[in-house]
Length: 192
Image 1 (cartoon, rainbow, N blue to C red):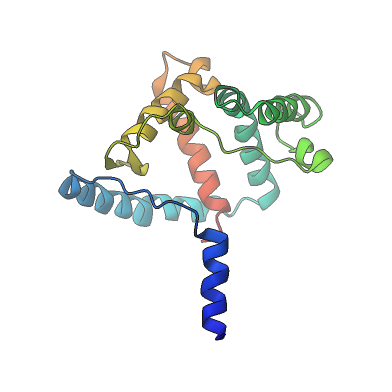
Image 2: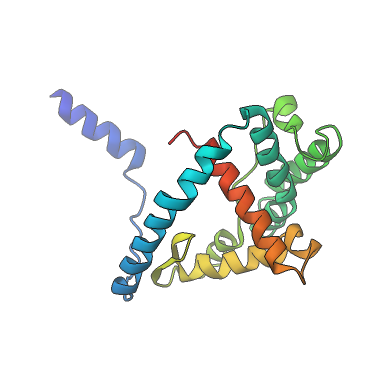
């Protein structure tokens, strides 16, 4: 058997069972326009700001990212529970408690250092998927990028579960500033 055939068999064995998910794109002209704007936003605003923010040493930037990740832990825990992932719910709850106390409000990810368990990437969009809500159609959100109708609905749900939002519900500008700061920090930590 040729080496190429073995590679194909290995690929099919590892990934062959996955179903390709196709999402309709009835808003293609709109999506292309918003994608273009997002690309320019990233290239001319976000990336230069993140480069300046990279002047701050890595440990404080990582600590800030840990802090925001810890703040979002209750949202991840709620979604784990709503998806029926009881073990992940317990892990997220435990991570939140350890990182908030021993990790000094989450600035240090002590839970991962102690147990090796990292945060689960769970959100309301995934929860809706578990509850058999279909993807809907594709569209590109300004500044946030491509999404589906289900995931956009989930994103709005995540906002209403976000403790940062409820800490200042009458001050949406402050909420957007905090989230934008987190976004810039995360971009500065991206090696690209």
